[in-house]
Length: 68
Length: 133
Image (tube, each protein chain N blue to C red):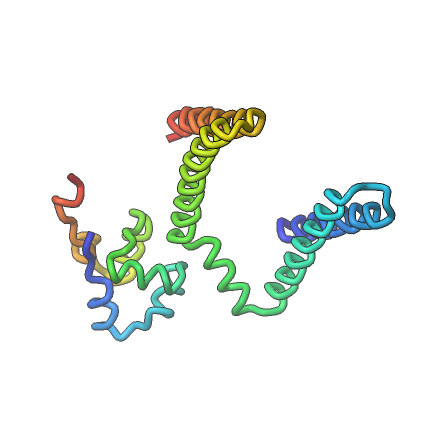
């Protein structure tokens, strides 16, 4: 699943460390999320979307092919 | 409360390790127990050092707590255990056949039983988890 975390975070001038602390996860987790190596749980996805003041669909891009 | 409990458990771990090591050193117990004692003491001492480090260093405590609670780390820990289980079954299965061919009947049987035990544990875990989730 692709996401816009890195773009949104950079747009708002938030550092990875700062963002990770706010989400209660490690910086490596944020890095893995941004590169698409790791997909978050629904709870973390919700938390991230809420932090940015957006909906989950606006941050995460669901791709049909991946579920097949 | 939970941290204090863990700290006491670590002290007990060091004490048991020291007693085992001492008894083995005195000749009352064999080498197996001296190794066990040394292992317990090492683990206990390392945990106690970590306990004091987390108590006195706010930044380090925050890092440790984040690493423990981090969902990716939890995912990786579970994945690593799953991989370890799979690899164990594969290695033990190969060893069962190899040892049988080499004429090591008892070792072959032990490896075979280990595979059976792992498969039984897997199915029990699967059934329990299926009811839970």
